[in-house]
Length: 369
Image (cartoon, rainbow, N blue to C red; front, top):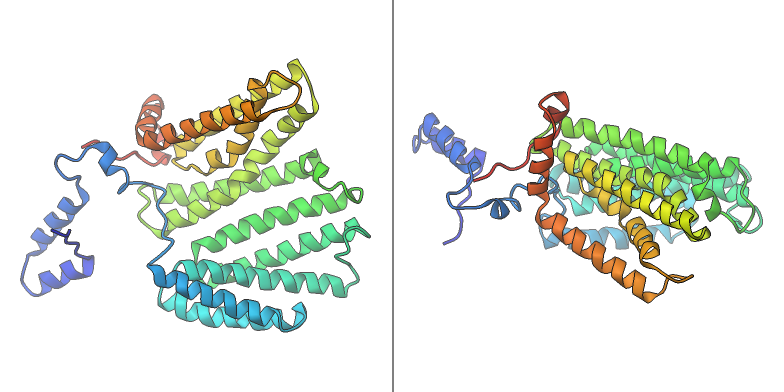
């Protein structure tokens, strides 16, 4: 027999009709919130997973999103960015009023917020080009990075405008990631990297420091949302999810990427020491991820973990297929073990933390049946 689910409005309607009393409605709520008899922790965890976030209301959301993309791509192709981007932004706002504000769709909202940010980015780039800067990367790398920084900053402004109107949690991801990347590209522009060697600057102190600070700010904002909703029953949990997604790579890359560069460039004991340090840092990040019950930081560090393990396993000069395969297998098994025992590990970790403000700020694990 199919499960019967009643909404709060239906329960209140039943009280109004005299079918049940207010006390009975309260008892039904308590029964609905309690675990079912005979259900163990592993069966509970999918329903009590604190990192759930709404992505689809149904397949119609995908259908709507395809239509949005086709319309906006067609308009973008009509002419120069300065002319068509305001038209695209207006179309996005009109569709958002219908699909996000009224119908509360999620995936179409994500698509619309992304396109709105792209329209602002194109406007920002067009404004800088009008001022005389060029996208001609191989002729002028300085202009290229300034244009990238300006475009991303404009996209972040678009994200702020969109979130202010529609309160869509995904817009916070746009704001955070675009702002951070604008800072990164701005730092590269200030240091005027040689033409053809831009990637070297992504591990320079002048670049990783602003990226790490931006990551800390986004992480603090995410934790503020999480702390305000420890049970993660409201939209604040979705806001925290997207902020953690934006913060994770900004926290992980500045710390570990320089070590990975040292591993790739070095030899002997230095390589081994850096690889072990990477493993230690990933372990610390894993403990933090368990404590706050957010997996984004671990996901962001997986590629670095695989690289460090491959160099530790390797016995030759260059990493071959064997070490990479072994590292992939080990990390894959580790991820599966963590995923299947996440709540049990969290219970064990929280049990080691003494009672106090820190423990009260962390979300509680699901209760045992």
